[in-house]
Length: 66
Image 1: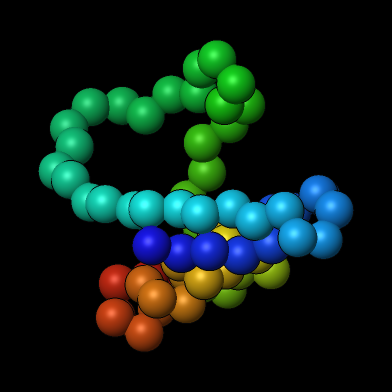
Image 2: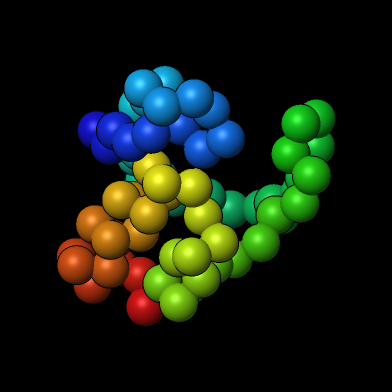
């Protein structure tokens, strides 16, 4: 589980994120509240929220995100 300050919210508002992996076949498409789907590399870390940066760091350290 990852936990960090919620982006754009008052201090003390925290986001907790649990991540998992799975095999997927098909085409990813944005829908509902998802505006767009983009692929990000570790060099794009600065474009993400604080909790996402923790996920990026974890994946990078594990050799899963270049």
